[in-house]
Image 1 (tube, rainbow, N blue to C red):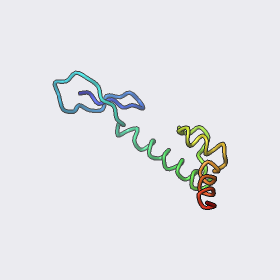
Image 2: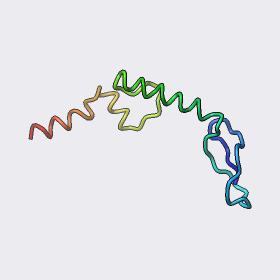
Image 3: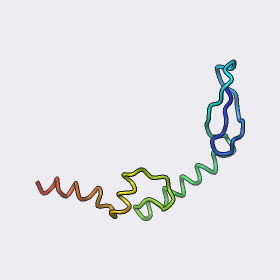
Length: 83
């Protein structure tokens, strides 16, 4: 199997089974430092603002959380505590 970087498209390795003529995807060692740096930056932004940065890949839950200003989590907890 050929290992192809899902970011830059570079063939960066071969792995078992060697006779299988297919591709598998991962992150090449050249893209990994940049990806890790971007993750570190996003995590720092989240910690600073306690929100999800615009343009980040977010789930529908995170979108509702951003739109509600956190009430998507806080409101159900408040309701539970009041019961």
